[in-house]
Image (cartoon, rainbow, N blue to C red; front, side, top):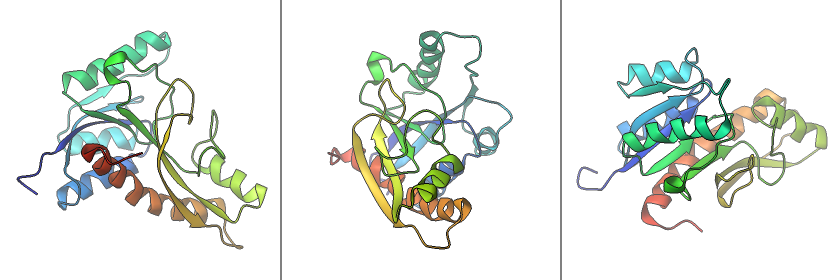
Length: 198
């Protein structure tokens, strides 16, 4: 993969950093032609920030508290721009952003449901999977979408479905959906790089 052009990524995290870890593993294994140039964390005490530090990736901790959305978003995207990121990946990033003009159409998010179902403010983590089970759904999955001015609202780029089993708990369903995310997000990044997304 040495002669393949690598997509320069900025990854935004708010928690455990499992999706960041997955991307780094795929890159190290030669299964994703990308580099993570910068990580922006909304909190400094999360595992995602420690993953970035251990990997030697520049880390910016930018909490949104006491800032206007526009001012905070500008700081986030300044960090991305300073790293010459071509694509911004929201990977477990729980905050709304005001997309700056230079990154319009270049910010994606991974969400643990088949959007538009079970998306929007408050639908993250186990909250999503509990809602899926309470509704009695037989299928769930994950979605990679472009980010716009609303939570989980932008154009859908890629989805992966998984079955919901009769004895599922929120935790068991979350594990199955996350396994799908581990394939879906790298595929979306690779297809973004080649212009083959819808």
